[in-house]
Image (cartoon, rainbow, N blue to C red; front, side):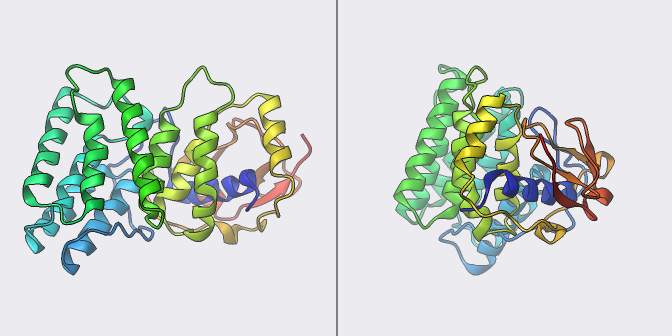
Length: 305
């Protein structure tokens, strides 16, 4: 297993190349991603529809929700019985989980419920597809009776069941990690949700470096201030892990969005052992902002605490 902090730093560079932002900051979806990573969300639809579903999920994982609908419309034209196209639509309507419940309006809940009904009516051809729809339904169901926290935790639990039921389905684990990380308890200073999500994502990042969601959600999971005690514990736990290569070759461009916000913040984790810097002699602080241009020539350099 790779060193989690170093892997996160490599992912940070990847996301800086993408112009990403972090929890609590709205993602810019005004500009269409120029390049997407590799996503395969298997559905029981024909090949043309499958290709469009994969594209829609790549936009989803890049937080480019406004671009999800067009490939889903093309998927339904290619295969009118592709019920999972409606599932992906219901998923994308929920927008950024890290801004919940602010982005979840009554209209979103109504439209998402209708999309899931359409998924069932159109046809779900496998138990796995039905399980995905059932999991997402846990969030939409009884939204007029249950509060957001209860429904969000139910979604987290149901996605975990899907990931456990289909261990070869990496997308299930990725989606569970996203919701798990977003469902953090702000009073929990052990950061249990975030660190569990990171532990799930670390091996996926190694296996799927071009997946736009894995590094994205890994960074979100590390994007919190931690106490020195928590930082020390994480360093101690990962001390036996080999280091990541300390060059910009670990950075891969997966998408390009937010040109107006073409900068991303890192160094909010409380770790000071390593910082991304233009040269080994440059010491960086928590307030450092890395632009796309800076990251492209960055390497990770060690620094004393």
